[in-house]
Image 1 (cartoon, chains in turn yellow, green, red, brown):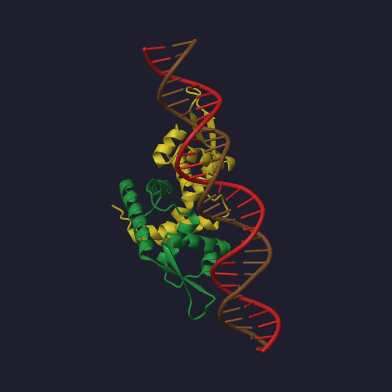
Image 2 (cartoon, protein in one colour):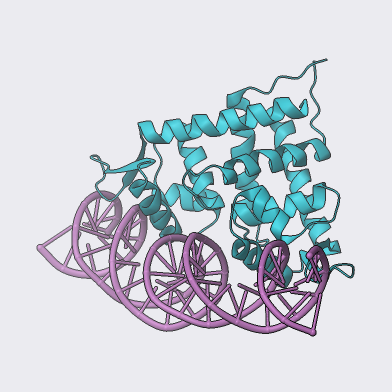
Length: 116
Length: 116
DNA sequence: GGTAATCGTTTCGCAACCGTATCATTGCCC
DNA sequence: GGGCAATGATACGGTTGCGAAACGATTACC
């Protein structure tokens, strides 16, 4: 059974889910920050500043600042790599997991209302 | 044929599409700006500052500033309502349509790669 | 016609983000 | 050990967004 997500459906889903996120009082992440957060929580570790910068196609300070902000929000945690102490390993937190799970529920809910 | 979009699939789709958007050099919109843009292009007019502010649950200056930014980018256009000259009507542009279409293609493409 | 209400914008002080350049620390390798 | 490369963080100047408050323009009301 193949599912085909059409462009119009995709856009409606996107709008509905983004609207639901904007309307909530949760942390207001930028697109870059949210992309980082999703990647950290969906892909297996380890995650480094350098790797994320290459992935997103941005400079390292962008990643450092994003981690500063999301770290202050409790969404991620940073630790020095014990093997190579130059590296910083980005780790998940309970709060971050909850944020991601909430996002997933929002998308699914809006998708169901649209029949996607 | 019922389609069930699971949370994990939804999140992977979200990450992939957002990553593709971040990696492109296009305009870097905030979540609020993108939500406004999607709404204007998906819902029938008229669209007003007041209506968008109520929809998103934000103050009017937020909408004004978002329209300033996206107007400078050519993504939307503002006109005074001739019937009631207090109102401002937000109109679509060719450039905005292309942006939205590009976003739709990105989501569909990433969705197909994920088998969603 | 004069007052009140509505609509969108502007102003203000503040915080966050950006890109470039630079820095301190750590590991590599001869 | 000493020079060099790599990693992440920081400094800097500039831009943009934010919320609260105040503002002009327009319309509604009595």
